[in-house]
Image (cartoon, rainbow over all chains, first blue to last red; front, side, top):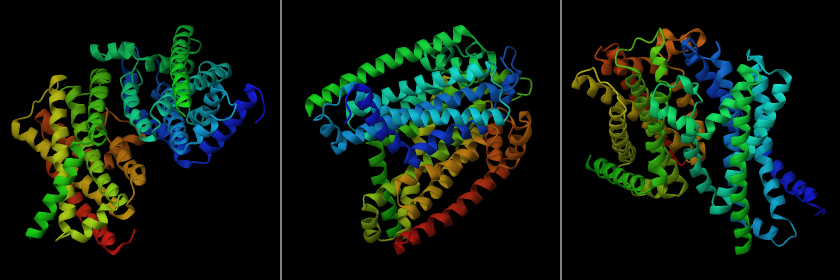
Length: 259
Length: 257
């Protein structure tokens, strides 16, 4: 194993990326599921663009932002189940006997999930452009979109890593997915918050971090450079990442102590 | 005949005990429809203000019917997955050997599916009413909606049983769910059929689920339409899926996949 933290991260990351890309059951849902949902939901909800105050005349432009989040959501199960598998098979115990540092192990282990998430991001943008989505923020916006997508994938992957290390069970990680699904739907993914009529739903959506993530993605596509939405989106992503990474690191250290 | 009933009762009781004592199995079947009801009826209620939305009972009732039919379909899928799990644990092989009449196995799973769905639909109705759902139809009309959902649930359960008898693996769940998911969302989910434009309107017009949705929405709003067509379709589907499930049972008996 090459010395230095970068070398250690690279070693674990290569294994994680190879492992993720070799499994169609991981790559396929991340890539296809968000696009299928977009294809069936966008025409069905086109009527929403006739609501006074709706920010665009194409629901497709509005809805494509959701794909980036859905793709990132799969990073949670990918990184979590892969780490839990390493716990279950004893691979993590063997790694703990090497001079590998905890931060290198964590960063490397989530690399596979994040790579698949970023591949999804590239595909959603490509498909979006082919079917007529226009990105108001232009080429620079695409770069920021990738940066935000990377950050959001890292957030979910870190939550997955925390769950995988804490429980050491792939089944338990899969069990978190429905909860994330609930959080996902109780947000502003389908309508802007100011157009949600039901008070309790608007309140939940306002407190839900997912709303700010989707609004940041969406702003680049339908508004252009909305610094307020971008600032809130990046701040939420960084905050969640910091919390999840701290949790994952602590769970990793505890697990390594145990072994 | 008594052998069929004994096997059915025993299979149903075992399945229900397993489902109701295992939160990991029970929660998704309950939680997903509830989340959809809250997310659609709560988050999308402004769609009720669009010019083409003319459903008299309001947006919550409009979405309630979709969520009920969706939970009927996915409830059936969840029940069928128990068949696959039983094959994976080798229990199904022992059941096939021990059952006095194997038709009872299919009937048992079907009955268990109906009981599980009764639990879900009761919960959905209570949450719908609390969330402000208006029922403008009469009691018999509302019961007709419930009956339509139960027959739909039977069709989905039989489809799922037939599928799982063939593949005998829980890993096949996504492949089994995807067609149902697509059929469900290629119907007028968010707005009435006449408010849809383009290819989705054409596809939804030919989608059999649209007839079920429109009949259900007719029942809840007290203006029944296409009820005969909807019941005809769903009973036809039950007959087809019963054949599919029984052929699946025969293949499982023969040890084929």
